[in-house]
Structures are given as C-alpha cells and as structure tokens.
Image (cartoon, rainbow, N blue to C red; front, side, top):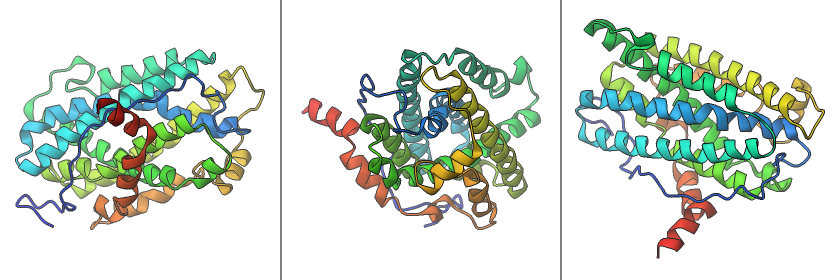
Amino acid sequence: MSSASGLRTPPPTSIRARRTRFDLSATPLHWVPGDPQSAHLMDVLHIMLPPGERWFCDVFREALPLVTDERLREDVQGFMGQESTHARAHELARDHLSAHGIDTTRPMAQAEWLRTRLGGKSPFGLSLPSPLARWWLVTRLSSIAAVEHFTAVLGYWILDADALDAVEADPQMLDLLRWHGAEEVEHRSVAFDVFQHVSGSYARRVTSMLAVGLGLNIAFLVGGVRLLSADPATDQRFSFRQWSRSAREGRIPPPWFIWKAMPRYLRRDHHPSQEGSSEPAATYLASSPGVVAVSRARL
C-alpha cells in the first residue's frame, strides 16, 4: 500500500501502549539456568533501553510537526506510548539486577549523558542554525530507524527462542522480553517511515546503519563483559567460545547476529514490512501473561 506521501505502509493496525505487570521478585539473577553469560548479554538491554527509548520519544516529539500524513502521525503517537512503557519495564529489570548486587549506576549515568548531551535538540547546549538543526534532526531519525531494524530482528528471535523454554528460563523475565519483542515487531515500520517521510536519503540510511551497527556491537560486548565481571554469584569470565556455544544451542543470538541483519536494511528497496509477518507478535500479545493479567484485573 502506498500513501500520498510515498510511504509503503503495511495493512492498518492499531499501535497502542499496553498496560503490563511483571513480577521479578522471584526471578533468579541467572535467569537462564546454567548460563550466566547469556543472561547478562540480554540484561544489557535493561541498561541501554530506558534512556534510548526516552531519546526516541524526545526526537519523535520534535519531528511530529513535520509529519503531514495523518495515519503516520497516529502510528508515531502509538510508537511513543509503547517506547515509554518499554523504558519503565526495563527499569524494573534493572532494579532486579541491583537487588542481586550488580550496581548499574555508572553505565546508566553514561547512557543518560549521551541522551541529553549528544542526542538532544541542541547537542552540548549549542543553538544550531536552521539548516544544521534540520540536518541534526534527520541524522537522529535515520539512527533511530537503524536501531529499530535491529530491535525488530531481535523481536522475531526472542519470540521464536524455544530453547529458552526448554532450559526453563525464568518465565517472568522471558515474558517481559517477549512482550517487548512483540511490540517491536508490531511497530517495526514506524521509525523507517518517519525517516522516509522527512528525508529518505539513501546515503544517510547507509551511514547511520554502519554507525549504529558498530555501536550496538560494542555496547553489547562491553555491557556483557561488565555485567559478568560485576556478578557476585559467579567466577565465570566472558568468552566468545561460550557465546558461540550458547548461540548454537539457541539461548542467545550469535555474535555475528547484528552484522548479518545489516545487508537487508541496506537494499535500496528495503522496507521493514519485508522483515516478516506481524502474526507471531499479535499472537503473543494476545496471550502474554504480563498483558493478560492487567486486562483481567480491569474487568
């Protein structure tokens, strides 16, 4: 389907924030049994995502006056609602790490510094002239679109990660991650469509993807090493061999997961709707314990 603004949009869906309830009070620190490294690699999300998702909302609020397509405006508002909810849920998971003796204060402070000083409308407090302000906004929109490519791909992965059920990973943490992954799949086209609507520069898409891909790889690696080193309940140290073994057994995406997802995004005819069906996400969201519990409580 093509709109008057040239966007290729999937069939109409209602992107909305859902109320959730996740109880991590009984969740063990090593919520992937026998595999603390895999658990901590995914725990990196609890540190990166809250400031990152609030940054998405900051940028989209700034861009919203430029979005003239009414359907896309509605999707953007739904996207912002979902991202705000994701940030709060991952803060709950970060509190879970703190309760088990892992101090996340420093990396959270670093992430917030990046959000406010480098990601804001006025980087480092500088007042930008109009042409530079527009360039800076488009740069941030293209970066968010690139990040959302990876979050959607990760969403499909976690929804299909039966190996985590097989090893009896903690159901509450798994539900939180799958609910989040399902909503990332559900709104996978929004950031890309906003970027296309405001700019659509292929060169900008390429440069942002390369920068984001490198940055995410570094963030996961550094974050995983730090969390494992700070874990008071294990002497295990980070190992690529262990990462590859766990990936072969389906408990974590492989080390090359991000790089492998990049070429599809770099095709000139790419659109996020090509990444797969929304059906697995819709199916999970209809049965997620953390979503259903709130819905039942409201009846």
